[in-house]
Structures are given as C-alpha cells and as structure tokens.
Image (cartoon, rainbow, N blue to C red; front, side, top):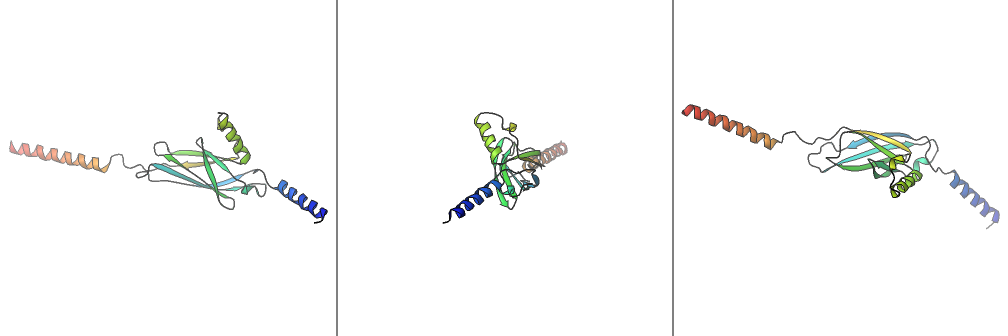
Length: 171
C-alpha cells in the first residue's frame, strides 16, 4: 500500500476521533414520567422516566449516560435516537409524594461520582450534566378503614341495637 494513503487514512481516523463529541454541551431535556398508581397489592413503587436529550454539539446525544436518584445510582438506557429511560423502585413506606430529582452524568462526571464514592465523599458535590425533576403524586394505598373491619363494626352495632331492643321489649 502507498505510504501516503496510509498516512492520509491515519490522519482522517485521528481527525474523526477528535471531532467526535466527548461531552454534551448546553443540554436540553424534555421528560415524561410514569409510576405505580395503585399500591394496594404491590410491595414496591416503580418509577419510570423517559426523556429526550438535545446537545448543542452534534453527536453528543449518543454518549452513554448514568443517573443518580436519591443517593442511589440507576441505569440509563437509550431507547431511541436521543431518547433515554431511567427506572428505579422504592419501598411503599419510603416512596413519598413530591418531587424527585434525577441527576444525569456523562462518562467523565460519572467517573468523578465513582471516585467520590470510593473516597467516602458526598456524591452531591459532583456537578451533574443536567437534572430532570419529576413530580410523583403518590400512590393509592387503600382505604383508611378496611372493608372487613367496617363490616365487623356494622355487624357489632346492629347486634347491640337488636339485643338492646329485645331486652327492653321483654322487660
């Protein structure tokens, strides 16, 4: 092969790798949120956030992302072109209604998160690529009084009234 062709090929390869985006600049996020709405028969609440990411530098949307929710790391899955999904579970007692902040990291900032974890430092000190805030309205946990207890109370009250009335009639 021609040495000039090899040199040209190497130069093009190196240029292409340098031009490739290494981090997302000026990220724009649009998200939608889904969660378990009925907690009467489950032991954990499932949360799913789907979001689209748009960066000012072309090609950066294809970089791998990582997430942190409530101090726990969660996987980020690419589900389409520029679309991602984060999911996690919480025990019913710990899952309160309100806002949840999902901190998104690129490879570089995620490496800083892992380094902070190994050093025993607070991972909140690491700057995230961007944050996604979702609002959880809460999940239905059943009525305040179970129907069995309510039925037992009604039966007891009816029996009391019946026996009281009967004793007044017999006296």
